[in-house]
Every structure is written in C-alpha cells, then in structure tokens.
Length: 207
Image (cartoon, rainbow, N blue to C red; front, side, top):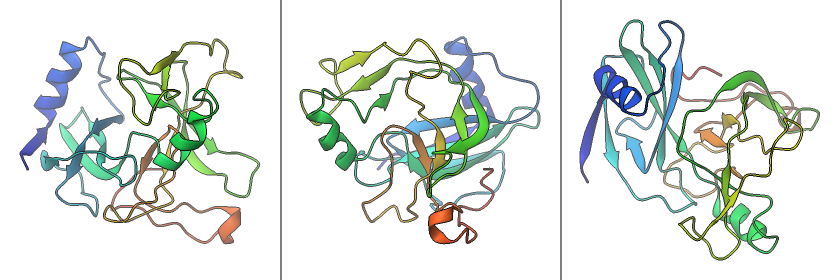
C-alpha cells in the first residue's frame, strides 16, 4: 500500500485549495477517508506523521481522524471511521435511507457537548453545529452518484447530528465500530451503561 506523509504544509495547501479559512489558534479537526495512520495506537503532536491508503468496507475502522495545531504546525493522527457501519446501513436501506447516512466532503463546525444526551450510552462528544446535506443509501449498500441526497434538514431540531465521538470499539482489525453516520475515533467512552468507568482512547486524543 502507498504511504503518505501528512504535514502542516499539506493541510494548509488542502485548506487553501478548498477556500477554507484556517484559524490562527486552537485545534482544527480533520478526517481522511480510506487512510489509516501507520501508528494505529494514536500519535503525539509532531511536525509530520505517516499514513497508508486502504479500502473502507463499512465494517472495519479504515479512516484517519486528526487534530491540527496551525499555530505551531503540528498534528496528531488517530484511527477511526468517517463512514457509517454496514449494519446501520442495512437497517436504513429498507426505510428509504433514514437511520443512517454518510457525510459529504466539506467543512463542518462542531461544539463541545454530549452524544445521545439523556440516555445510558450518552457520552462526551463534539456536536455538529451547522446543517450540511447527507447521503442516504436507499437503493443498495454503498454511496455513489445514485445515492439519495438529503437536504431536508433546515432547522437544528430536524437535521441529523453527525457528531464526532468514540467508536465504542478499539481494534482496527476486528469489525464492529458504532456509527450511523457520525465520525468516530477508536476508543470506548465513559458512560452510564458501563458504570461510568473511565473510557479508553488513543494517545493524546482530545475529547
């Protein structure tokens, strides 16, 4: 598989070509679909990290979630997924795609909050802060140009919240991560269902 070195300059170039504004301080989160960090245990912040191209199958975590500090040009990478799990897709397919979706490529805004607040599996997460159209699989088990584009969410209490949270799973070689459309990072969260035991997450991951 082809290895890619991810650097500050690469991220800055990608942002510039997409006309995305880059803040001068704080963290920028990013996701690469079909790319895994070579260090699947998570990385510390550094000037560069290597990753490898992989195929995603909606069963295994096959994406990279990253944190970028533009102010000092450093970044950290973590394994995860930017696509929904196949089980969620199968259930959604018979309901015109409702219940699962895949994020479109773009720039999203997130706020600190709780995923599934008020439930036994509620846990800390970054909540989607703006509406963005999503793809839904109502014809088959993939997302292509024939997939339904859902633009119906026009108010915050209607549109799907594709949050950024723990995957409830921490092994990239075993299928089973939890996502109906959210971006998820390898790890298990602290939540009521597990007695609020401390969760585990990759080295350095900010939740």
